[in-house]
Image 1 (cartoon, rainbow, N blue to C red):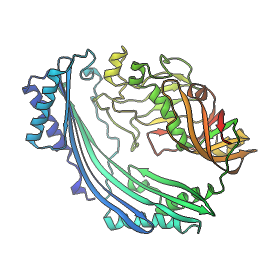
Image 2: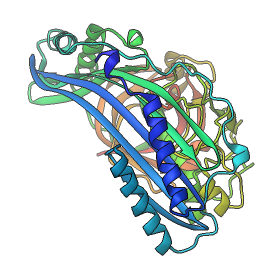
Image 3: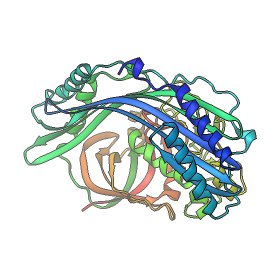
Image 4: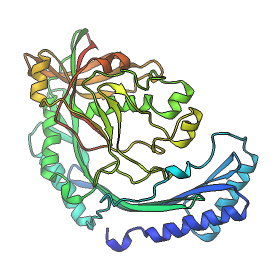
Length: 445
């Protein structure tokens, strides 16, 4: 993908300005618009043959208009003057028939970003299709060639994208930024006798030079699959559980969902009215760091133009902040936290131990490397997921385990966190190490 194919941020600014000007001509009291443009390349190689090779270019403009407290939305993927004019007309028409909502409206002008820091998010990768195919092929080959028991593959995929986004509103806010993302993944199947096990590995970064090597990703995918061969079931019991970092990310994701504005307003969360209360073990801290250079979830402002900033959501297990955009903040009588559109780089503090240290501390229990199914009730906090991993005794892995269920209630499980490892996985918007939980119910035979 060449630099010439990159989105033009000035063009997007012009499209947003045009849309906002037209809303004024239609008599709207306020309006906001966001535009995005991106291009990318993706290739998947499976069983040493190219399965898919795709190039994409996407663009879109979303518009919200307000007539007093009545709101209308419309969007288009056509950036022409005629299409934008029609989108504005449609949005204004919808707003005139909408019911009034006292909490509808733009973000407080005083909360809008006044400085747009350069977060080093844009690193386009001029990779040609034949180079992408070679990299994906090398990745899968490293997995297939590692061991004769690696008999099948779901493929290796290399993907790269680069784009930009612009947001503006009638409170004189107009800003945008460029961003890029690159990834390489591989998933393979290992077979021994009649048993087959699948696992995967991946790497993702803003800068292409920070991706792990194709050979490393392929070998790790194969090794993970091979380690799962010979899996056994467990008898039903209660035991300590160590969640690997990729599983712990989702474990804390349920916490963020429970602290989000929509759930709080609708009272569909097990953490209602939890501000300044002890919800997690006192070894847990959780910070939001929106301005990390090249961070995978970094952003200078949120989806409403509100400035993002560092803050602590959980301090020694005590909830210090919710996750709010302007609308639900008003519904709750609070202020936006700059989270319209989501959170930005959540960092779970570690307690200093390596994974080996945590296995030793657990002694006997279950190391969980995969969970399956939904199994989480956000209202009650009940948690029940299919799981696979390894049984541990005397701090040492004994054998792989599958076809079991791990269960508990999140309100209790968060309080039963014993330690958080220093093996932090930084490949996502929630960065955490392994999480040792004092006890969970394991359902098996």
